[in-house]
Length: 373
Image 1 (cartoon, rainbow, N blue to C red):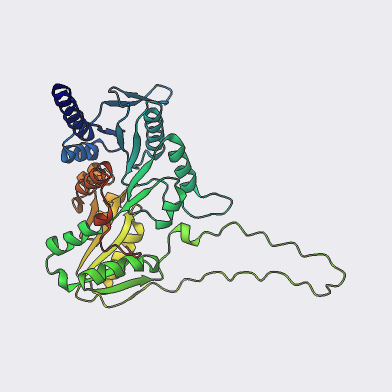
Image 2: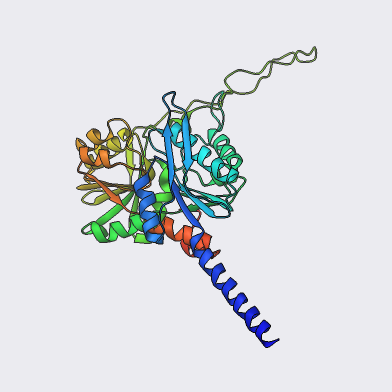
């Protein structure tokens, strides 16, 4: 009887050890072709080997996904961000997620540092909310959780039918300002347009700096586009209606001359935004700031898409430095422009993965985060 109890106790201890070992070994990091360097950095920080997954295109441009290792009952984390090849990035992610789903993975978490199509989150003329369509496709493909960073609009989280953790890169950018900008106490945080004033206010309050807003600049197309209600309504035909009364026409916007609200003379101007893609508006804002007396101009953003001829425009502009994170690969742009600097945020993504995997609270990563961040 004693022997049976001893054997039973040994078996229980052995099972417990096996469960603990499995809890640390059932995490698998997969990545598509969008940002393999970031996936490698995350895997190294977690101390795991990146899973074997081959993603390639056939001659007819169809995407093929081949997962080399068994992922049955494991927690899968797919690292895929949005780049210039955005449509292929999305299809790779969807096919990888569905392949994991049909291979009996326990959970499938999409690590998407920059969510593509996030700027198309509002209704446009005879268009649609593309971000919601993308969210539905991701959930249908098998993703059970989303980790992303600095969504263009926080309301995008409501489009998904699964949990979404919208991490913030602002602590890294704030740290850069304090440690890498000489005499940052003589700086002023600048909002490129009134729409980004909330983000600028958040930075200025944390750094105890003044704020300035550029007003009169041409806004982004998504802000100015109408929602498709151009057609005038038909007037009701009624015998009792002698005088035709219609819906009043909305007055057209008339932008005031561009000006800077706030004092930037003799100071360092720091423009902050969630992404920098088409840099023409940033260059125009920098020229205005230079005319108003700013002696140094920085641009800080989370996502550095830097499309088209952005490196050349930045190099020829009054902007002294553009600081972005590595949510989007931009090594080629850095070779073309020495003003572009990169901040590594892989430590934040790896910590989020570790906490989700170990079922720990995520509240530490959102400490002191407000609605304006």
